[in-house]
Length: 457
Image 1 (cartoon, one colour):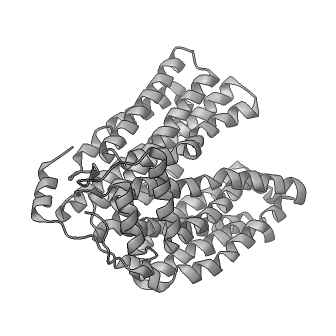
Image 2: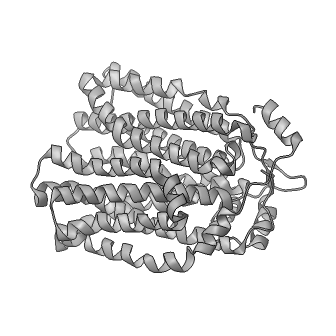
Image 3: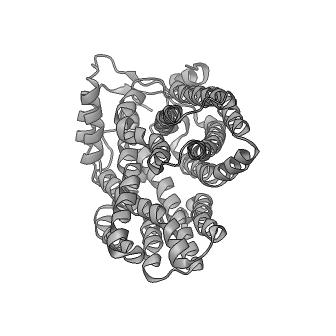
């Protein structure tokens, strides 16, 4: 993939002149991806890497808080562990995005996994020696959080170079399925089972999982290091970050998608934050029923991952993305009217289904519209707006619940989701989506394909 096409449709939400101007200012980058016949191999490598690392992530996110509970009864100190795992998205995402647009993205993914191995192994040694402490858990959590930012941002940025346009729906669907199944389902379940065996065994398993996939990205065919065009000058880090933010904001389609996702993530944060208390107090059921309600998210997510491509063919990408608005509305709206656990489980399924349908299609559209030299900064800004809204939603709904009660606390989020319908249909039009889908990756030259096949950075 080279440069940015000046013929990119205005309907797709990216004005060609603005895009070319931004590319020139940031230092144009020409990136050689893999040949078309490498799509299946690269897809399998990315999916396996995503599955195993997310399984290990799911285990460590269970182990660390449980270790904290063993060390202290302070709610603030225990919740601090969870905070260290997510805080890097707020503090480092934009800067890491700029780094991803400068360095080899495959090597960054490997470096992130090496960082995970060091963090988990260090904690393992401390636990085995009986030297674990809250500060050590915070340090491990921050290291794992930063590694997650690097890994996810770099992996998202290298997908367009690893897989051609025709295969991106498939790779995004499979990667999303792997994330959902391993991080939300298998990871916590396996983590709980391993902790029952012993913390040392649980941490050892996570360390070996990270180690097993450490060099797996080297199996990817192609080159994934952005190279600057002749005569292009690098800008200071802040200027490059600003360029990525400007690109996102100047594209009506991408901007509306990002802001829509921000509101949806606020609703998800609110639901995840309050639903444990809601189910136990309003529904008056035990832990097993709560687990079943929560599992609706993951089941819906898996259903969405396997059905995105056929649903896109039947209804079109735009209507499939709209399903996320309906699913999220159901998820936060049902608790307003009923505490029936079956209804809550069904609404969670619809929320998980819509969330995955949106994620797969949003990734594919952004990979079509965002030039290679901005992929790292774009995805960092995108994740900052979305994932950064999760804790905010939890904080807001907690305050509302104290004042107006558990059921009514969900109402503002249901209203906010309903209001998203207006900007969605005004900006995310059929023409805009069709324009983005028509933005095909330029074919590689024979020389570029030869270099991609023979050169492994």
